[in-house]
Amino acid sequence: MRAARALASPWAWLVIVVGGLVLAWVARDLITPFGPADVRADRIMLPPGSPGSPLGTDNFGRDLVSRLITGVPVSVAAGILPATASMAVGTVIGLVSGYVGGRLDRILMSLMDVLLAFPFILLALLAVAILGPSFINAMIAVAIAILPRNARIIRAETLSLRERDYVTAARLAGAGAPSILVGHMLPNVLPTALVVGSTEVGQMIAATAGLSYLGLGVHAPDVDWGTLIQEGGHFLAFAPTLALIPCALLALVSILFVLAGDDLRHRLGGVSRSGALT
Amino acid sequence: MKAGYLVRRTAASVGILFGVSLLVFAAVRLVPGDPVSLMLGKADQANAKLVADFRKSYGLDDPLPVQYAAWLSHIAGGDFGRSLDTGERVGDILGRRLSATLVLASLGAVLALSVGILWGVAGAYLSGPLGGVLRSAPLVLLSVPSFAFGIALGFVFAVWLRLLPASGMVSPVDGGGPLDVLRHSVLPAVTLAILPASLTARITAGTLDELRHEDFVRTVLAAGIPMRRIALRHVLPNALLPVITNSGVLIGSMFTSAVFVEAVFGWPGVGTMMVNAVEGRDYPTVQAGAFIVASVFVIVNWTVDALYSLVDPRIKA
Image (cartoon, rainbow over all chains, first blue to last red; front, top):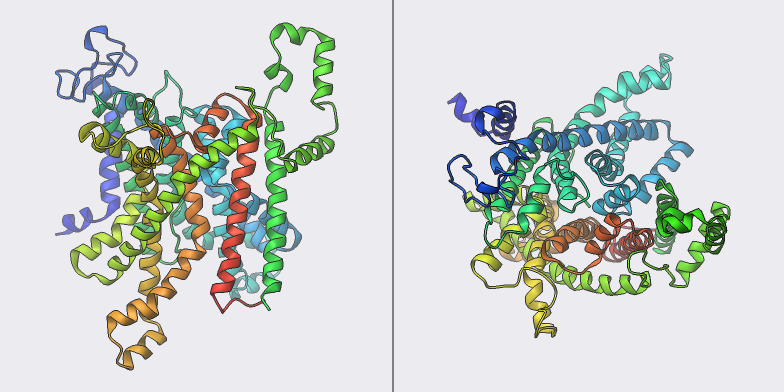
């Protein structure tokens, strides 16, 4: 009964799927004898179900299972790192801007408004144009692209907390701005930051993989699911699984992260967001 | 009486446009490396006089504010410079690419709005498992990247069923007419519509749910007006307002999908133009594309706010 209820939670599925993928990565040498970059002229374009390569091989004879597993840490990091970094910076900007107010608030929020004028991908593309295409830069780019949204959400939360009695009490007790910000405001905006940030993990995985798909993220010989989809896409007519399997895996993992974030939102209450990346 | 609100919104939009132009201008100057090394060959770079002439003719030695003013006045005159890749005028490229994206986006928007609103209404009013599926599906669909959808749809309808073309805007041999473009745009437009349709469904269902418990609904219900009529005449018009307010978000998310959809289906729009320009370090094109697309969004958002203030009597000066 309890197990059945636990399985209804997206968190259980997230732990099972992502945990399983990470385990597979740890045990990758036991799962497949082939390395992700092992070019085998005798094993080119094997269909799924072939002995030794249950998901088939690509046009260089590289094993898809091995390549998918190699992409696990990259793809998971591509979600967690930018979401965390962007939410951390957004929290600092939102807290300071909302609490200090005045001219600083106006300057910071005008800057965020200018950034918000760019659709998500356009800001990411602009960042990649400056930084140059690489995996690290793709993560920085998507973190920057989501930053104005995070800062705005935390600022709105800060504004509503600023007038609470306990904040006034702390101020009257002689606490300075830094101690109020860290001691009283931060703990109270953390649930919002956590909820919004955790929903963004899934979106960041998809966005970073997207930049790789566009050829602006991970580059050969490195592998992530986005590059696999991009390479596999050329063979959609005669070996569709090469693109469709990584697509399905990417979709599954980002769906689970988003559902888990949404579940957290329901548990903690409040914070209604459309969940869209503009 | 609403003039005050409109003036404030207009001033804010002009301020944001100014910020956008500054950011785009600054972004390209932040790129490491010198335009000289990008545009001149190795042998020419060694020629000091040639480099000096080059810097002078492009105004690279002027102070940054002067360069910015020159850039802005060129843009105001419709001159976006030339592509470093093809040497074509960027303004011409943009015009062609924007119209291709517009074809796709307008088809996608019509599809997204009609399907999304119906979907939201059905989700809010249907009970039982079907209603539950309709209510939770948008969140799931929102988290699937649009290129994954595009590849899946392309596989089913182009490769498997062979019903529709999977790439390009026109057929290479005998195509080119409006019907041919329409046939090519079915798959990309449907893929493009999935995300905004899900968003619209989510917004509509959410608003309908809140509105059901409003006083005015109870009042008309007490007056003996049938539920179906209340839903169509009293609730739905109010539920459409948030869709209008969120249309900025909707259009923004559509652009993000469009970049991926254009890449999947080889559609010659602004999205593929930007991606190729970023990849090929074609900075005049990146600069012009980013500036124009962001400006379009500022103007769209301003229009939405203006419309909204006209539609919603609660907004006052």
